[in-house]
Length: 286
Image (cartoon, rainbow, N blue to C red; front, side, top):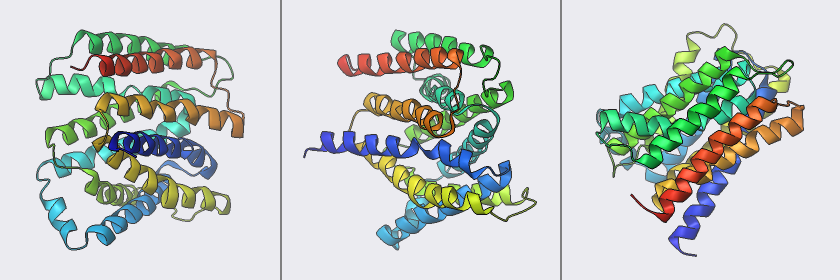
């Protein structure tokens, strides 16, 4: 098996593993800050422990070598988590995942402003179509659909901060930011801990929390930080759409949460624009 095939399989596995993450958050049915606390504590501890076991004494020097990018990445990670958990609680899973899927659009805009990487016509076209799709999702809610504008705005925030994570990672390449994922998760737990009134875990919330914190987040994180080193960035973006497609379908199947016609139409526009852009970039690099 060559590196390209390995990369495709690893990224696909990571995206598929993240697909049920939203369902686990729904099944936990916990308040905002306890959810952020336990999600960050378990997921961060497992990822950090894995790096310590693999790299041993080299791990601290890996973290120190990231310099200014470390605090920037951690802040963006914490804000992504907070916004994502809030969005999952306040709006539909489909709305959340379709909107978060526009993070490559924000990455292109931030890279243009911060890194002076001028967007090409392909990127501008994708931004325009994605904005149309998100507008349909946000303002086309139907009666009975589990959608809310504050939740949609939080999903936009999650996409924005996720894009910041990508831009910070790009700014310090070829160094990898993946060793920071564990510490960033623990920082999110510390921040949430100051706002948690009750740390107890309801009996029905324990198994989805363990599945998310001990299995989904650690393994998916490893896949999504390892695979992109083996395949082109546009193909990574294309494969990441797997989560945005299957995540809402899993919740729809498990909890009968129909997202509404407007969300499905807007989501199709968003995913179609991103898929078109990624496929086009693969055919004509640059």
